[in-house]
Image (cartoon, rainbow, N blue to C red):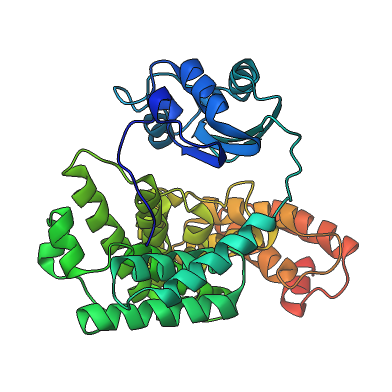
Length: 413
């Protein structure tokens, strides 16, 4: 990268001239004496310099936290002292930093500290950072680790920010780098990649391939491309990210970012498969807690007349009715299709229950499912030999709403 790098311990004997900026990212949690380290940093920083410090947030270590995030934050044997926002503020003040600003992200703390008053420009860093990534990607040798790294990260961050023109430019740079180094953009990983050590893996694929493919697919999805056409890209992203994770594990390291990309890409690939009509993807989505996606798939299966697959999904744990918390339209569609599936199977109790639930979900105003749903409920009640109840319900609904179909009104005669 053309930088003057020194691999050494930073001690009082090596303070050097006052430093304008000190960046200590994910460092102090590994030190046995954080206060001593912070005092050393105060000695070496310029009077108007700024120290940037990131570290896990001990306040996120709770019984309700996910296992993955707990493992990452605790890192037993590697993390020695963990900070909360309050303890880190006190430690920085005690070290002599008069001005401290603490921010929080999902699981970590970001601290800015200075002897002089701080005037942070909120949000300015994103633009500067992304411009830097684009420039460095253009400066580096195409296909080099640094070029692929800068272009891939630029693609990811441009996608996060919704700047799809910049994302296209970053993808073009990344694609050109991959072609320069590997001959072509891979459509599948070689089998050896799934067990390769890190140096071997870097000879088989860009180490950031999973991240780049995920960002590219999400960018195309956001601009309206249909999911089925993106399934292969998401699947390859998941495979590449998993290959990187296993290579890191061989040297006793974890890459939580790659782990997250692998999980998200796998989820998106399943969503793409479900939208393409692959019923086999739906139980997997359900197992991952993607209940809304599973119910959308269920509705699609019933509407397509694929009763056996819909029943298999219900038996796999979908349930008889969409749960509260899902979007209202999906709950309405789900209840109606669940009722229709039960009618086709002559499971009248389940049909009546589903159509009754639908009736409670419909607004006071007219709704396209009102009369079809009521028709299903009436059929189910007659099937249970509860004709008097069916007629009483019909009278009640007809009195409240105009436009009842003739076949329903005949029951009143």
